[in-house]
Image 1 (cartoon, rainbow, N blue to C red):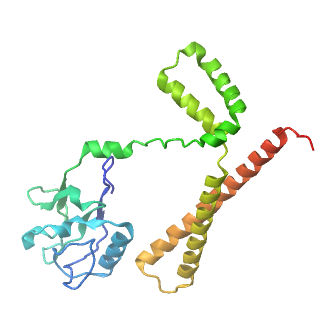
Image 2: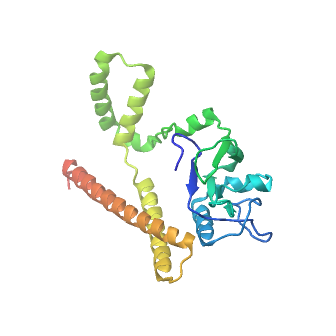
Image 3: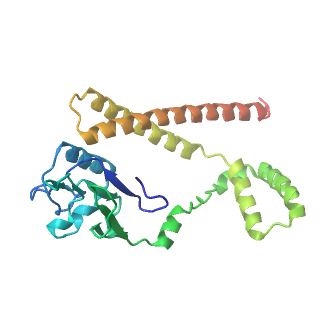
Length: 259
């Protein structure tokens, strides 16, 4: 279960996984040193999942009395295990994770809760998408000055009756300039970088596909790499079609000069 509207994401999981106590020589930043019991196979899979998705097991970072760790009790009370966990992408926001012992929910599980501190202002700023500033090549703009002036005049003729503000007028000028100025160098650089990235991802996908005994993180990586390669190839194909279309359009509109 994922807590809605919370940033960073917080997840509660009950997979009957026991992660137990972390070994002294175990190098894994996603689990802390506190807990009870021994790790089972599902516990290993949960840790692989947390490692692949960069999730912290918050229960394991807060020291408690031994009786405050277990979350499940077998019928008759012979066995007690810690199998309910709260995971998060940012453990610095978690102030405490603990068992609620004074609430009887009529279940063999005990309730687990986390106390969080969230910077609302910072969260709001992260969700606001900043507009990328338009970079205009003034030398190229001078070469196409007549086209720019015609386009600008047409735009302002439309806005004349609306009494636009200074901000709207400035934005209109920038957009008109961006539309008439070509950017072949930037496009070429972006294209080369994208092609190289796809090639590297394709190579990594082949390596993972050939490997017989993949670990949990490697299986997750293979699935995500496969999805990414397919999406990028489709996107590049669409971009290529658009470039060909625009090139053909400019060729048709370009007046024939004297030979």
